[in-house]
Image 1 (tube, protein in one colour):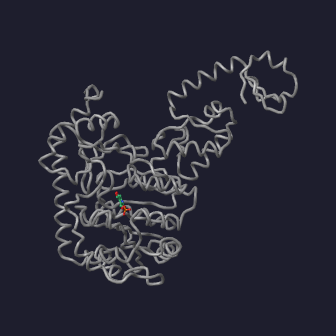
Image 2 (cartoon, protein in one colour):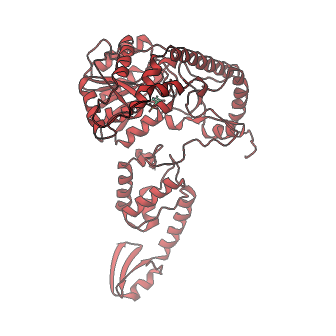
Length: 494
Ligand SMILES: Cc1ncc(COP(=O)(O)O)c(C=O)c1O
């Protein structure tokens, strides 16, 4: 029970009185705990709560750390607390709830360990961008609005699955069979070797994200550092945070990672580095040959560092395959190739080449999880990879994406806007501020992704997925972007 009293009444009450600090006391009367607050304290508290409510509209509740955890978790699950949203500072929330700061700090630590919130030093604590709960996606696309935000391939440029599925049919497999389909491993090995990736050890997992989780989990512990591109793949950033890893960001220019930045990250103790050699998400940067050589020289100097290459767009990337693994003996490494962008996210699997120990650890861990990637799925991918029509379709998709990227970059350039996208599925457009233009574009009929999800320290930008933006539509999108970039532009809602 909480009773608000004038400070002077405290003296009248007598009985057992214990002090929390000058403005608050606690008395026990008839076996009940009575909390006594001075009027000054009450007024300050009310003002604080009012200010807090404005800044942090979600009301966190609870008197113990587990209740506070549950309350924040419920807010995230129900959408009242959005990914990226700031939480009250520890002391403020403690004062608001009438609990000690260490109770709130414990709650925040539990949430951080579970990946629900992230803490950025003086930046405070906020809901993770990808909390491990089913939340609504970061971009809500209203009906009738063109979706250039989702990073999807063009469905019209994905293979028809009918005949591959029919061919993959047949007997159901049982527990205990070989986890990897030999035909798929052979096809993957041929492709890796063609691209100078040593491919003695290869395995198959349920997509690039699963590969990253397994490989990072095999080599790194909570609190270890991982060097990640900035801007970089939003899901990888979230995954690293969820695994309790500290991120050492490194930046990129048009040739690839900036070598001095990478060196700094590795010297600061990063135990792993993840790079995207082509179709970098979100910038589209493709690693040049010269930069690949410099990068290889740097990673050679840190033989204990795990090197992960995310070659996610492979044959639709519009850039040659490059690897740091080719001409040198790296200690621990993995090259991950997902089929999501080439064959479609519903066929999501990834082939992974790596050193024998890393591949063994992935396979050992997989045995305790899903065991293997569905044999039906592996057969369909093997079938599609063996079919010359798929090669043709991927070549068509690659040139369509290239044409669409170029058309958009040119349309933007004609209007004085710089867009970046040397390869891949997206164009990255630096802007002074992301959220206003993103909102105004929605009102003009286009959904794009605010760059925040992809950025660590890098400046604001918009990510535009071009896979379905036809060249003749580029001008009309660019015109609308010009409008949306004007802070004074009034849309129907504003
Ligand atoms: C950089 C990057 N890597 C990998 C992937 C694909 O991951 P998955 O195989 O888990 O679908 C994506 C998909 O958006 C991506 O952008």
